[in-house]
Image (cartoon, rainbow, N blue to C red; front, side, top):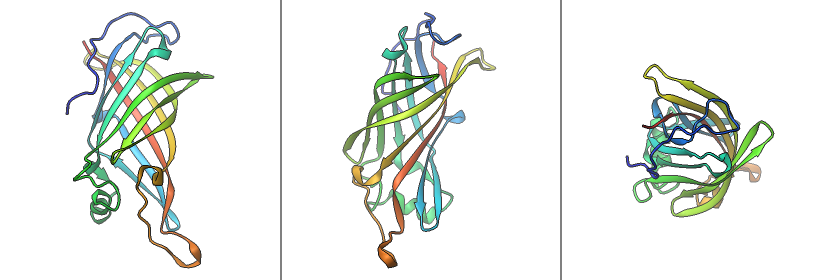
Length: 193
């Protein structure tokens, strides 16, 4: 899958996080997870996307850093093939006609020791703003000598706002599926040469 951003990495150190250098960091899909949780009846269904790619461009001034991610909606995985097929259908993601979900950042703001990453999330042709609460986990070096960064992020959205409003009415005015979707990110990314 092609990256959304292609900027050559540098080795200029940033001033606010020890060990972090400016440059382009590619998401390591083997060590990252993009997941979600949504209420279904009395429990919550948890799912992940198995195929995604993206880059984080760290600038000398952290507030100028950017991120861009593309997720293949057909790669949804909730541990039920029947449910996954329904999620791929026109009732939900319509993955055949709108195969990708994208996120492009618009701002990175410090908030105490953590950050808020604002951006635009596009699903099924609908683009709306979203904010992720981000905890930066640090900078390390992997077994191949690459500089690695890690972070966790979370956000909640109303799926109806992105046109994903399928539901089944239940007795007492209740609905089978909740509208609120919690998004969870566990990301590791490697500095590119």
